[in-house]
Length: 162
Image (spheres, rainbow, N blue to C red):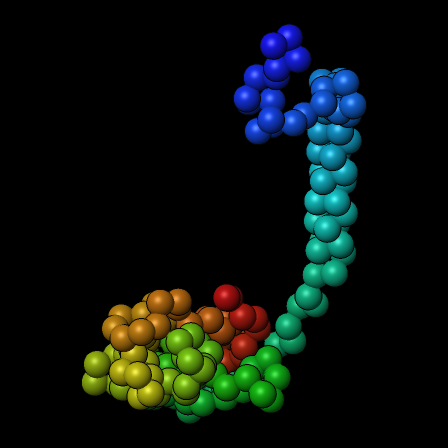
């Protein structure tokens, strides 16, 4: 019975003398080098992002301030000809502009002056005509705001706030 091995050795036949294992020092070196490599890659990605910033958007005249009466809206395109936007002059004369593309499924929003909202007819969503925040329906993100400046008698689009 001297040659009889315990049953657990049959279930787990590991030969410790032939097993290669990692020492604590090797593990510490691996973790330190791996962390240093990850930190270096993050710094590289951040520097590439800073170097490749999008150029400033051009200023573009939208309309004369006299062309937009209180309680009305005006459609325009900014910053390119493929980007529909809507300028809203509220009943008190405040002027706000937003992207006309709904943040839910990209339908075009329309101004409802009686309710002072921008409505998306596709899924009955609505946004505040003053802030662009979603009020009802499926949209959960606000509309991108177009920055408008009054330069003399002109309304000029100068940028987009996402």
